[in-house]
Image 1 (cartoon, rainbow, N blue to C red):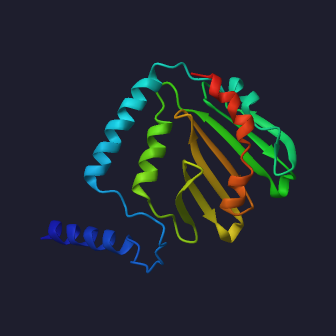
Image 2 (tube, rainbow, N blue to C red):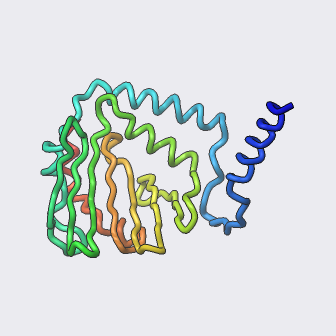
Length: 194
C-alpha cells in the first residue's frame, strides 16, 4: 500500500510541475509544426549532410577568428575570443560593454551535430521559456531562428551558412534589425572552404 501511495505522490508531483496551458496568438505566416513523417524525411537528409560534414576537418577556433566581421551596426570589434580545447567556435564583441553585440561562428564540420541540431530545432519549433519567444522564419532564403528576450532587451538570430557554419548575432535590437546587420560580403570568404 505504501508503494502505491508513493507512486501516486510522484505522479501528482510531476503533474503539478508541468506548465499550465497558455493561450498564444498564432502568427498567420507561421507554418504548422512538422509531422512525424516529415521529420523522418528531414532526418534522412540531415544524416546525408552530416555524413558529408564528418569527412571535413573542422576549423579550429583560432582559424575561425579571421571570418568574424570587422564591424556590426557601425560598431568596431571590441574583443574576440577563440574557444580553447578543440572548440570549433569563435566570438566577437562589438560596441560598448554595457550594450554589446556578439557575433559567433561555429564550424559544423567533423563529428559535432551543429547543422543537424539547427535543422531539427527549426522543424520542431519549440516554444521558449516564460517571457521569451522563438521566431522561426525564412529570411533571404535562409532558415533563421530568432530568440527574443524582451524583458532584458536581448535578442539573438541564428542561421546556417553554406550548409556548414552556424552563425549567430546577439544584441539589443529587434530580430529583423539584427538580420540586417549580417555582413554577407564578409561571409563570402567562407565560400572558399569546402
